[in-house]
Length: 436
Image (cartoon, rainbow, N blue to C red; front, side, top):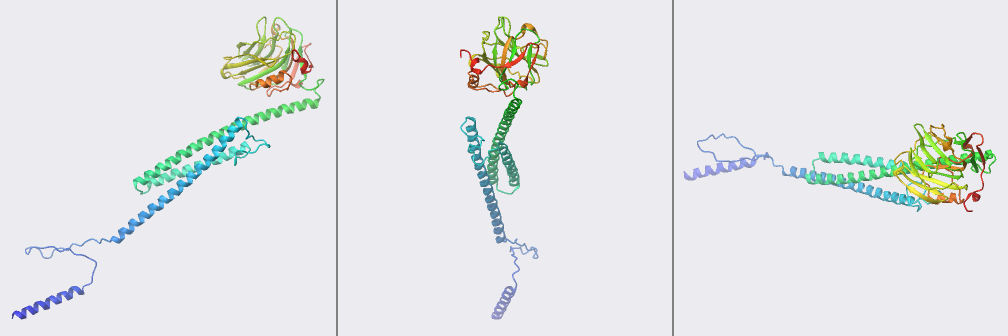
């Protein structure tokens, strides 16, 4: 009986093993726990979640690859920007060196006989300005790209340390590009100013040349050349004078030069006066009574150490600038005096009347015979700049003749009024030089 029961138990155990091995694996895992005999035998079965370790590794691998690709792109962009900055720095260095050479006269001019020392910068200033404008536009476009890139980085899911590093690097590049743009804008402004000044200077020289050619074509009247004449004012009256047919532009500096001869006493009178509406004494050169020659600008007075009442020809020049009202006085090529605070920061007003031989109480008239000039005047020229001492000396010793770029002494530019006033041929320069 005992052996029969043992055999039945073995048979049941083997059948249970067969049933267990015959079941298919459904991928689920079960949790077994002890249940009290008095408890509910039909307890729910708790399933473990599918760990899927391989899927998590694949996701991490993809994230790392994306980060590496993004970092590589950023490095490439930064490398390109650094290359651009180095290229612009080289070009700006070439521009700065060429500018310094032009400033100190060591070459770099735009002339045909000069080599272009600026490499890829065109010889024409207008082309330089156009190229600088294109370069600046390119830099501005790159700045916009950097800002867009920074926005993309801020919104991307990068690690905080990497994102901060990239933003700092982009910020440094943006500052460098902004600095280069500012430098290029300054260079463009300088080139624009230089081009405008060169154009005005060229136009002024061409106009003077055209006027001179016109006078030569007309034959210059009875004079050897258009400037070889003198204005003679033999009497102290209020109706003998000369007048320029042209006026002055607005000026912030000027030089007035002339040949003058007078033996009038007391005082030679007023060889030159310029009046504008609202100010008849805008520029006046006058000697009255026993006072020294005076220079008036906007009714402000400075006494000049000039002596010309000996009946001989003298070459005089008066220089003035609105900056601190600085002035200089030359006689026969030598500087005899200088000063400042003469109508400081006052610009010479345009559109007035230039009278030779009379002082104006109103613009162009109301002359006083007591202030009239008696003598001879010639080669009265006006420039809108301060002449160099060597230029003044060369005219005084007859080495050269420099016509004014604002007012030039031409027979067609000077009108004569009053019976007795006349334009006559001028002595040769060597005969006018004192102690020649």
